[in-house]
Length: 328
View 1 (cartoon, one colour):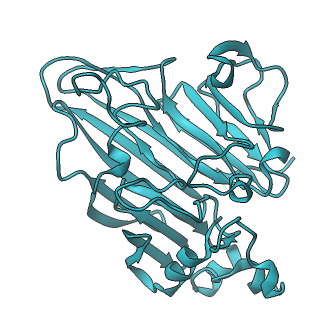
View 2 (view 1 turned 60 degrees about the horizontal axis):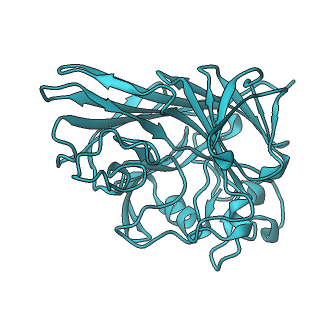
């Protein structure tokens, strides 16, 4: 679910190319397997839309507007976002219709939080550890290193041309095809002393209505509730989202996000923390309330519950994989 202006620009690309949206350079694939859009600010996946079986068989790119392609009226092709730019209910990810100007970050898609998550800034090298929320990588300019064919889709490699940390250096790999989206954040230790770090793939998943969502797979997991001063609790039954939520679950299990319209499987690699977040009735200034009800973050993370100690010469890969789950 992305802004209509962004979807229009993506639909204009045939094959692979670059577009300019909200002041950012965005690499786009619009091919028979589906659509993918990655902002080079932050190496941030903004959009993923797999093609249907019928579309792939015909060898065409995904329809610019799935609801219209299915015969629905144009009026149903967008939903009210609370802003001038409506949201198009296409794709598995959500992007705010009112993004911050550069050098601010775009809220939505899959931001890379590195080399720390939230304010867990043990890897912050500033004198008073006053670095930005979620670390500097999500606002930095990344470079596109390579695009390869991969499993009837694409594999995109990105890296930072500049150093953001004296000892640690990240790169990102994005794989997409008609069945799944996979994102890896790889950290290499190039220095001489161990570093304690946290990180997250801050996935904003598009939903029909956030307060009708159910997250399956966390029964019995311990969690920290950030809305209650990090109070520790245990999940009883499946998680039903009925109000704002901000929790860190200590679990490495796959979870399924069910919004009543789609069941999305979220698998995580080298992550024992799953973060579930929506701001409820008090969204951030860059997000209208109507738009905020259209996403739920289900994040692959390394947090205070499972920080990573990297030693010289070592590397760490944090990953997430999105795919459709079977219906009950």
